[in-house]
Length: 406
Image (spheres, rainbow, N blue to C red):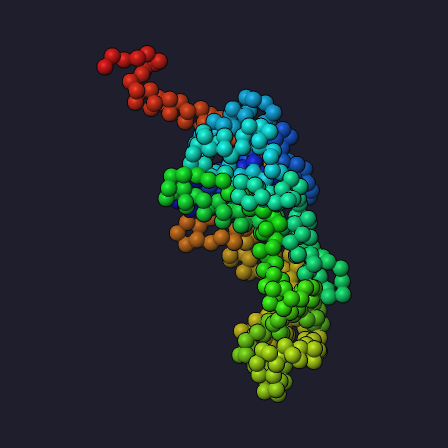
């Protein structure tokens, strides 16, 4: 048994944020059917490709594992009818089109809710949907870079004397996708209590403002406009990356106890006396930071970690090769193997950070080929509809289309 094995999801999303959201649901056991337009999600064609199999690239594999695929053309009435049939028994529809797109096909929330009042319809957009709260940017498209720029993330990322910098990975998509999954689970819980579904939406712009929460309260409390400070923290010290002889180490000695331990390991016991509390350390951060940097620079990464581990929160700045070699990553199943459709080889993708004792998620099943599951999905739906018709017929006393005598 898995946590969501009784949940069926129709996934109309593409690119990154939406598929990441539905991947999390699939990891927890939901039956996720990826409804793709003619030609499929264009991310299928994004490199890198495996040398033995170019069915789809690593980008698509990484965020579409555990799903089934069905290709539908919403400009075709027959395909729209097939989709409406699937909606009859679905729990969730997830889409990340621009506001108004589904209305063009007559498949917007209001019409689908008439088919299935228990449906949770989850829209993930750049600027939200007017059904919840309107936005003056409602009709604009958005990608991760745009969301990071608008939400203040880029302004706060990078070195103090450098330009605004996006976070290296797609946090505008991925963080929004995680929040969207939370949104969906909340709506399902409400539906379980009331029997009624609802429309929910998560906006990328909103998610980035939420992610930048520190800047929001700082501006309110101080009236200042916070800006970039590299790897440091504006109100906590020491909290930074320091260069050693052969790499970088991060040190976060925030509590008084951690600070005393750091001073002892650096053979600077007088600092623990002269700067006993956080405000003292923050006031004199320039001098203290220079001293810590000098100490770290005279050691190797391994030597610094050997001195500080267990006494001061710290760690090496790792690249992805280091992550592959990490015992933690393997024991926590954060690197999992996925099959390739036309090869006996496997590829490694990131596992799921969601851990459960009684209903553990099971990531690792490969992403689907385009329209790979048409027959089983369509046959399953026709079987459900046939059984439903038989049940309805027996309830009103009809067999083979002929009325029975009372």
